[in-house]
Image 1 (cartoon, rainbow, N blue to C red):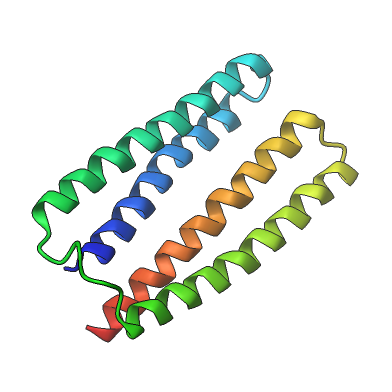
Image 2 (cartoon, helix red, strand yellow; image 1 turned 30 degrees about the vertical axis):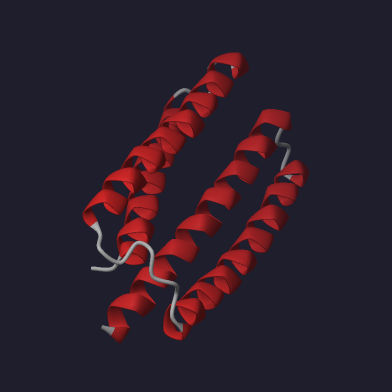
Length: 136
């Protein structure tokens, strides 16, 4: 597996696990204090950053192709993944705004925006992995 494939896999798995935990906790603690939920969100962001940093260091230490430039094929995968992620983000942002019309309050709209961002990044990484896997 290439460095970029491992990197995308790490990003996807860490986002799904950490933010999956966050949103499940959000559903179960629906009436929790907003300050407590903001602390959980901040903890999720910090945990994601820490796992990504440590994981990418480990991947870089164990990969031989970490310094090689992206070839045209990988640049194409990245462009397509970014394009799909953008559309997912725009759709998610519009859905987050629509929650206002459904009676959502400020924190709920904020969580919907965070969900849109996480889903967009997951879509981007997943498409990169699928395209990379098909090409190999």
